[in-house]
Amino acid sequence: MILENATSKSGRHQALIAQADEALKENRGTLDTTFRLNYHMMPPAGWMNDPNGLIYWQGDYHLFYQHDPYQAKQGPMHWGHAKSRDLVHWEHLPVALAPSEDYDKGGNGGQGCWSGSAVDHNGVLALIFTGHVDGKKPEEAQCLATSVDGITFEKHAANPVIADSPDEKRFGFRDPKVWKHEDLWYMVVGYGKDGLGKGIIYTSSDLLYWEYRGAAAESDGTMGDMWECPDLFPLGEGDRHVLLISPMNIAPIKNLYLSGKFDYESCRFEKQHMEQIDYGFDFYAPQTLIDDQGRRIMIAWMNIWGAAMPEQAHGWLGAMTLPRELTMAADGTVRSHPVPELASLRGAHVSAASITLAGSGFTAVDHVQGDSLELDIVFDLSQADASEVGLRIRCSDDGSSYTEIRYALAEQKLYMDRNLGGAGDGGVSEAPLAPSEDGRLLLRLFIDRSSVELFAGEGRVAITNRLYPDPANVGIVFFALQGTAIIETLDVWELSSIW
Ligand code: FRU
Image (cartoon, rainbow, N blue to C red; front, side, top):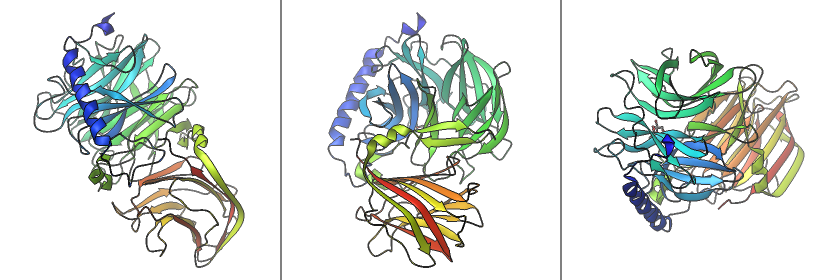
């Protein structure tokens, strides 16, 4: 079988992987742990960006990631590797891919095994990635590596399996996401040409020979000039699909989803709705998998290019968001919910009800504080006359440092303001959000030692940000501005560490 015909140079690749694993072993002992997270996936040491190769395979969830095992900055990219039985607890595995060939190594700039995806091909775990060498012609090509045990990967002798882009002049040709429909493999690749980001499609019956099928979708001029990390997948009823993209050069927007219809004959995607999948600063390059229960699960890089990244000085960089299950609502909007398995982290529980927030000042609730928490808050806004309601988290004792989450009733907007949040970048994230029909506002927060993920509106809105407060700042207070409002119920759990 063609997939077993791996490269004869595998000795070199395996030696480079052993060297990378050795460096990680040394480096992980030297980390400053101030901002290490309790229950989010992080690299053992060094640099991590995009999630790659997400797959549920032979009973485990596998997560690969863009990785420099030698340093906490972007260098020659390897694929790090971890697996999980429950999407909550992660076990680090040996590095899966190291740059070793002329299509993924060399030059003085960006290089390596860049982002891609994983599929099962007759029991073989296949990784499809972009070989990238800055300045080389062509700079980017699509490549294949395979494994029978899910741990040791060999690059294929036929690499690169797509040697060049369809047009000579293009801005980016990378991040292949492959999936199977009926008997054919489909690949969507991130592409940019003439100032327009695109998701282009290839098809194959064997993962080796690929036929170009044109662009599934492209920017209308407002959606970025290159679409990094596209992911195209069915969600919901009929032929409904979602195209997730990380568009370049339309700051502050860093992620978009298009929902609509994908036609497998013509390979065209018809957009019906477009929105951000997350409104935070630290959410990029999301990728999804489908598991044995048929759930579509998304994980993203919980950082962003160009940010201050205080943990870099501590010998590591990068975290993944919590895994989120995606569903399609009848109106074509995508909802995201942290997977229910996360409840296994719940420890000490505080529950309160009917808390009146009035006018001025802040309300603390006994025993509600911490840096590793889940909070479920139900505001009853049906009677509220306040202009805004919200809470401050990671508050210092003197109240001068905090991150504020607030909902402006008239504006129907949810904000997260980290301008006084500590080290790292400030900024205010905002998302449109109508209250539910019964006048309730449900906020669900996952606070970890240097992050917060906020979910609202039955999964319609998510805001993900990294925070770098003084570790001693663990206060939480609630407030209503210019009037009163009621917290109907409050549930807070301490979340235990996965490490
Ligand atoms: C997105 C990205 C991808 C690329 C990878 C390189 O964050 O720029 O387009 O493959 O990171 O690490």
